[in-house]
Every structure is written in structure tokens, then in C-alpha cells.
Length: 635
Image (cartoon, one colour):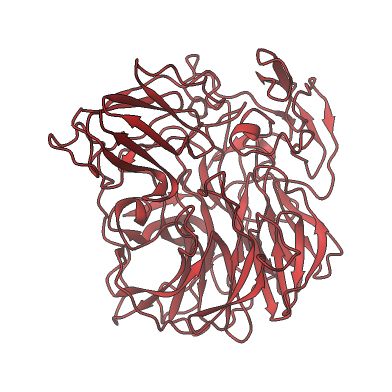
């Protein structure tokens, strides 16, 4: 599949910095040596092998001058049981496919979750963005903290790159989904109770529109009370028209830069929601050495939910504003397509009076909403093919808002080629899938050996090998991998991976004769319910199950309780209380609820004794991540 995008012609400007003075020096990576069969589709003339494994919740990697790869385990607890201790931050050195620990959070102190970015100058100068800010890690694992950063919210300090000027550049994510602190920051992203005064921080002065949003007062004692909150304010703080919020450093929603000792902190550009991936384009490419950012778009959640906001690829112009929280995909949020289930078709009110749409810079191209377009790299030579094309990893959608019937998007690697006019100015982009699984979705959700959550890309210095970092299966320690992609044929390289199969459709009825490890005989029934007003607030507690029934909630990306024991003849009802979509899927896929939105329920009557394992397709796999068990005893 190939998609071609032409640069937008809205009231938004796109600028390229010709002959930019900053670039990344390409340094050596080890050649791919390990081999393994897998279920990854690639273009004709390319092969994919497993290069290294054993990582947990890996979020970034980089290379040292001697060719070693350094992999960062984030310490994220995503997918792990709430009762279990989360994994610790770790740094792995990978030499010729063999990982060894440089920093081990199990026994060493200094780095805290979530650690998202790593850049390696040499084996004694490793820069890491973690749950406090920017740090330097030495070869003995000791940590020198450099800068405190505003990382307490939804998004933190992201990927790091070292410029040709030897400064550090990184993305700093937003505190909230769309500039307003709300219930989702307690019930979905989990930080509001411990940081009740935290909020987004502008890099420059802004003028507010005066629009406020009302939600439940989740911090107060009265469960029926409401709170009114304005953008860039603590929870429960209203704003007025024309109110000015002063800019400051460090700020959120920006690309920041500092010297390697932590001094000289600067704002490079702002107005991004979550600028996760950062790299410099090659000097001889169409982008002429410019700093490029991959940005994660807004979700359908919180007090200010936004539908249909795609992920973005930007060229960074020093001092530029890129539109968040009001201008997304080069359009104001007042466009009807951004308002989830709005009967008035009026869009989402603007948060700001200044800056405006005329101040916003546009994107090179956009990706499908929710795919989490993250780390990327440029092909350095014709040996691998597609010299100077950009290859970007898509972690995969979590399931906010409307989803395509083919299955949740992402879980793949895309190639982006840039069109130029006769004067060498970029005028458009062509995108195609380069790597994908045989069945759409994370590999383990479909019983495959393949891509779980690809999150970063690097190339070898000789141009022969592309490396893809895979975050791994949610909640499954040691499942993270590095995949190696090499070209096997001569001639013109193939362009796109073959089309994959759609994710399996929801089961209409289980088999007539069920066993203890299959679906029960009674047909499951799904009862959809419309999402609550506001699109992102937590649903009401589950309705009472039928007489003799049991309830299981889906909340905070977990089944609660995870394990239930019932007698034969009991009906179990699952209710989705999260703002994101979930499924109830048998381990053998014999029963599948399909995607359940917030407030939807799914019920099954269990007539046969046995143990029934199940999981959520977007967020788990059998026995890992978001999974559960129903044990049915005899009558």
C-alpha cells in the first residue's frame, strides 16, 4: 500500500531550513548475524531476522562510536498486574547480538521510570531522559542528574539526539491530552492524585480564549461535585477571556536543547503534543540536514477529547509554533471532524486566542490517528536501498475513539519518500508499509512471532542493515527484541510489504461442544452502550449482573478482578470503564467480543466447569499484559 500526501494549503505555513547547521553523525552498528523464522512481511528482496532479545518495555536505542547498540528499558508498568512490582529501568549494551547490562535498576540507583530517550556519545557518556529529567550515565552505571524537566504528566521527556554542534535535542511531551487537566489524568494516566497542581506549561506567552471545561471533582470528597478547569491551569482552576499565561523554561509540548553538561537550556520549537521521535536528516537529502520530529496526535479522552487527530512528521523551524492544542492536522479544532459524537456538529472550542492558525507551521505528512509514530531513521546508502528515505516505527493504537474494521492500526514500520520540485523544495510525501505482521495487530495477540510494538529504527554505518527496536509484549518481561532487516536481492529494491490479513472478526457464537479450555456452550451476547457525555470521562460503575451473575470491570488497562471463580450456570458480565477500547478474547480465539467502547458490556453464561483464559487484543496476550481467568466449578 502506498499513500501520497501533498503539502497542505491551509492557513498554516511549512518552512524548510536549507543547509541547516546541525546533523547526526552516522556511526557503526554491528552486522546482523542471528537468524530466526518469523511472521513479518517485508518487500521483495528483503529479509527480517531476530538480532537480539531479552529486553523489557524497551523504548529507545542508540549506537556508540565502536558500533555497539545501547538499548533503554523504560521501567514502564504498562500491562503488568497492578499488584506486581513494575520492572526497573535498565540500559543494555548489545555487542554482536549479545546484550549485557550497563545500568541495572534492580541493584543500582539513579534512573526512574518512565525512561524514554537515550543518546550515546561514548561508553562513558550516555544521556538518558527518565522520570525526573535529563541524566548522564557513566560506564560503571553511576548517574549524574543534569536537568529537572516537567515529566509528571501524560507525556515525558522523549527521544534524544546529539547535534553536529554537540548539543542535545529532545522532545518534551504535553502534561495532558489537549491542554486541560481532567478526570483522565487520575483514572487513565494516573498522575493527578500525586501531582494535583501540575499542568501544561507554555514556552512563550499565550492568551486564553476563556473557554473552560467541567468534569467530576475527582479530587474532592463529594462524589457528586463538579470542577471547572481551564487550559494550562491546575485541576479545578477556571480562566477568563484574554487571560495571559506567561511562558517559561522548561516547558511542555516542545523540542528543547541543552549543552551536554546540562547548561544552556533553550526552547527550539513548541506547539507539539508529544514530539516523541527526533532525528536530523542527512545533509544531502531533500530535507537538507533539518531537525525532524515525529509527533503523537491527541486522543479521544479527557475533558477536551479530540477525534481524528493523526500523528505527524514535522521539520523543526527554530522558534516555530506547531499549533497544539488548537491547530491539529493544519485545521482548527472547531472543525466538526474533531468533535466525538457532537450532535451540534460544532467541533471542539479553541483553548487560545493567541497564537492563532496563521501562526502555526504545518507538517510534512500525517499518519493514521493513534498509531504512535515514534522513532525513525534515514537510509544512509543505496546498498540497503531507498537512500535518504525515512523509515519510522509505529508502536500501535491503544483504541481511543473510532477504529477501522481491518483491526487496530500500527504495529509496523513505514517508509516515507519526499517529493521535490525542480528547485529542490519538498512538495509532498509518499508513504508505504515496509514491515508488517501477517495478521494486522500485535504478533502475540494473533499467535504470531513478529512485531509486537516497534518503537525505534537505526541503520548500520555501512548501509547494509536496518535495525528495528521492538518494545515487546505488554506485561511480558524479556519479550523486547531488535530485528535486523537486510537486502537479499540486486536490482531495484521492492517498494512495499505485501498486504496483511485483517484481524479476526468477533465471534458470533462459540462452538456447540465446549471444553474446559474452549468457549462455553451458551452464545455470548454483547450489549453496546453509548459513551458518556464528554467522550473521555470514566463510565459509571458496572450495572448489576443478571441474577446469579458476576461483574468484571475493564479499567486502567486491566481486568478487575483478574481472576474470578464461579459455579456452573453463572453469567459473567464485563464492562469497559476505560476511555479506550478493549476486547474479551479467549486464549484460543474461539470467542471474541470485538472492540468494546467505554460503557459497553459483554456477557457469557458459563455452563461447563473448567478454566477459561482470556485477554484483551489491543493490550495483552494469553497470560500477559491485560489478561484474566474465569474458573467454573461444578454444579
